[in-house]
Length: 293
Image: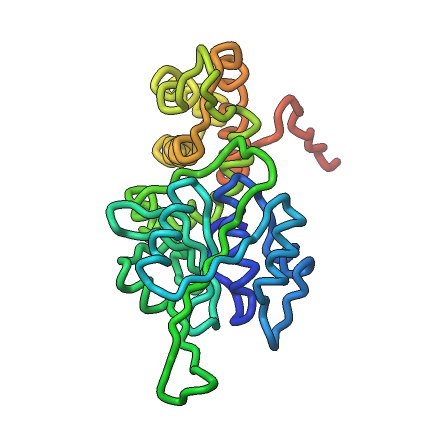
């Protein structure tokens, strides 16, 4: 899962839907989407199959058709400003992508054939790859332009929705952060066990950034003390990644959960340190070597 390229030529549809669902905080494996949709290597996945898979995960995949580029842009932008990711079938209806944000005239795409997946596109570039040219069956010299868009709309109220931005997309596109992008859903899943989504009724809460300002040094001290050989900068980078994911989804720590959050993040970092650097047995006496007589 998360933001990584597709391994073949025919699974762009499941990847596009998976990438759209994670914007809604719905974490699904593209293989499961392929199974439900009935994706085939010789024909890929059409919008009917993707709509079937979307319903299985609590969403409706609608279809909107426009014939003029500017009208298509306005409709697409309207959905994006509501926080609704939208699938487009581009390159003359041969490849699926997800569009997740419009900001300052730029569009943030999740394109599974791009090595970084996250892509930033101008309107003119997106328009040119989005348009489908359909030959008029009654006039050989006439060609119609079609712009189909498929918003992924949840059937129930979503608690955690990603607010992707140009700055975050550029950060995740950087080569040094691609491993982080590929583990995005793991970070999100761990954070959802510690944090909660901010709501208009949320009181006595603080952001993960404020939480780390208060407690990061203590957490790192404890991990370093108990493990003994942790790269402190690498551990801090894990916390920075968590901070970015939490801010993207609007996750906060409730005051009454502060101690539990300290324990949770410390435990996660200890598991990370043990997996990365190894750990010696604890509370076990070293085996006694018998002397040969």
